[in-house]
Length: 638
Image 1 (cartoon, rainbow, N blue to C red):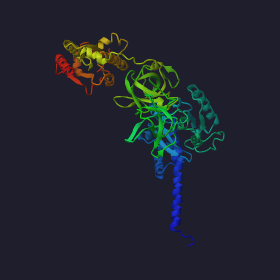
Image 2: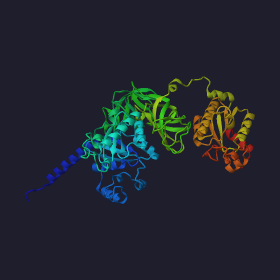
Image 3: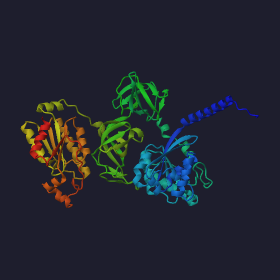
Image 4: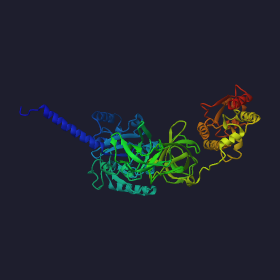
């Protein structure tokens, strides 16, 4: 043998291979990441395009490719050729219908950059899924079928992408192979889109003729479009500026995610830097408290840093012991963001149930979580025409502008400046389902001009004068259950005991305070909100407040409970079966509701959500009104 392989040479070869792998992994680790979405109308080729990107970037394993070839023959839409859309459409329903329903995220990489792409649905009913995919994207690829031109969903998705804050738009005119790579068709579509884009504020976009199925202008120039001199799609994706690079030039902001306290000798504040740059020695301010200090260390798992920038997760240590907790925002001392509790915002409604103005929702913005109340929309946006339409509420996929208020100040910036401190979601308090996404525009002027006025006579002093503990007895139940009768008896018994009370009855307040409200779900919500505010003022005056309202929704009863001091809200469920309440029908309301003369009547064509765990439950079938009143008074004053 002329060549002798020794153990040393094998060892050296293995070492070289290991070094090459380490070098490759190091380069791969430090590549920038671009998040982008594909969107557009149904059948514009979004899934096919992503499948082509995965295929051309060699991100498909051999067994996946074999399965893809088999599936293409079985359920594909491209005859005997590979149907790249099947790489992305993972749900059985998607493959059966040939459409995208859910948001599908896929990862791939080239030599220059890593990518996470979201394939978003084209159907209007899944618009909320498109918003979800767009919320973290740096770039949007708007696909247009060259045969069809600009469609309604093209406009809708373009508007939403711009609204969400995506500034890099690629107009991918797809399926050019089906129109013979005709330049005139491409130019006409680009001209039409240019006019539309200007109308919604899109100042610039990158048009390109492609074929996701054939691969034209995807990874390189296509011989079929010699008239096109722009970049291929991959080339553009590899060079476009990502949001993290832009965010690094903005003022420093870091929402605190958690307080890092592993032992008595270390205390730091961990989070993801939203914008800007920070380094040890920088003077910082913690909001909303306004406390100031100086950065002493920037700690990570890999050791301390001399500087940290937007997009990095770090733990910041301060020179001083100041109060800082989850939900606070750390900013540079000389350039802090604002804090307010009333705003104008754009809201994208994402729930099947309509928005109810005055209902309380959880509002999550960054790491902050507060209670928020939405007012009636100022207007709703017609995405097809960009008209501003009058609206009392928002339905599924509707987009509107409304004012909102929070129960305490939140740290924020306009969404156009900071997506982290300007973008929020609304969460239903009962179901914990996300019902909306929104973008803050600005704080309302009254938020800065209206302040709490300190008074010398406290609520405790008011209660002491009356020698009693304030409380709210909140009677709830169906119409005809006996709420007003029992509430009236309770007040009489308390009056004989020299207790200071006031009875708020559902019918009585509609003659004055709430005479402008009807009986829709939205009006019922506002009715209870107003009564809750009045009841709160009365407890501040030291009174025992008795209310008798159907108050059909748990959310609003919980909202009033949150207004009161702990232990002051006593929910009294006057539990009467619907058949018994209807049999009484003292006011003749059930008869009218059954005949169709009275709409939105609780128990007939409007729901009643019974309390799950009331402080007091009164079974009017088992006890008389007098017995019920005695039991309630005994519970209130043992």
